[in-house]
Image (cartoon, rainbow, N blue to C red; front, side, top):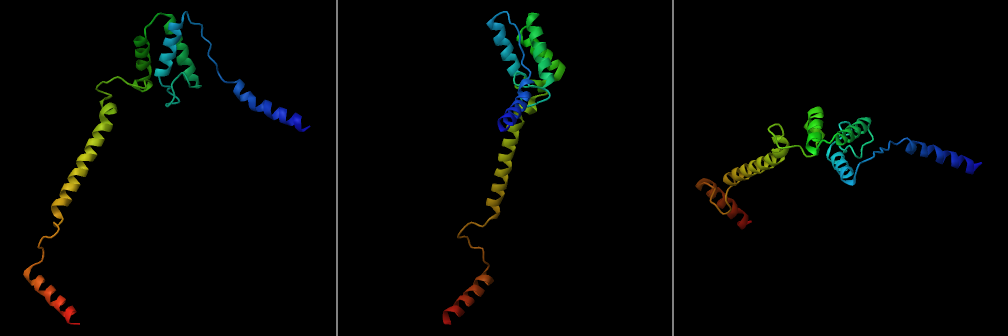
Length: 158
C-alpha cells in the first residue's frame, strides 16, 4: 500500500512538468535556427520582465516566438524583426535598448547619479575642512588664556 501511495504521489508531481510548453519549429537550415535563438534571447518577455522570450513559459512569450518564426520564414532580417517588436511593445522589449533621445536617461542616468554623488561628497568635505579649526592653532582669546592659566596653577598647588 505504501508503494502504491508513493507511486501515485510521484505521478501527481510529474503532471505539472508534462504541461510545460515545448516549441517545435522546423528551420530551413542551421543559420536560421541560430538567428531564431539569437533573437529570442535578445528580446525580453513583456510579462515576465526579467526573462528573455526564449526562456519564458508565459503565453505572450510563446506568441512572440511564433511571430519571430513566421517573420524568419518570410525572409525578414534581424533588424526588421526587432523594429517590429519595438514598435509593438516599446523599447522595454529589448535587453539592450538603442541609444536614442528617449533612452539617454537609461544609459547615462546611473553615471550622472554617481558623478553627482561624488560632487556632493566633495562639497561637504570641503566645507568641513574650512570650518574645522586647524590642529595647533591659537583659538583662545587673551582673557580665556589667563583664566586657563589660573585654573592650571590652582591644580598644581593642590
